Length: 150
Image (cartoon, rainbow, N blue to C red):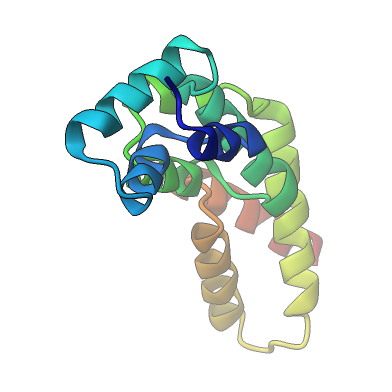
């Protein structure tokens, strides 16, 4: 039988296995009980790591404009499988991804308009875009375009 507290925890929002496992240990469950509860949640369709990865990637992309690299790192930190990470990243449309990256780069270039030193400006923009989790080659391309426009 599934514990009502953990059932509520999982139904409130999508969770990955490691989050549920940690919560069960916090609630005082032993190792065998934790594994039993997780298997019951999976069987009931309440816990699904692929669904979690898709929701996580979609949310971080839409709301925070994170790049694929940062989303992948965060999912790996939550011990999500490579297969589920790949499925989660499939939620991001390639054309829209590049368009948003360009928009972010242009906005950052506008913010740094008063920066006189072009090398310093490029370095700041480069660091910012990498920190957001975008790929190195896309960042270089976006920087070239953004700086030509400003």
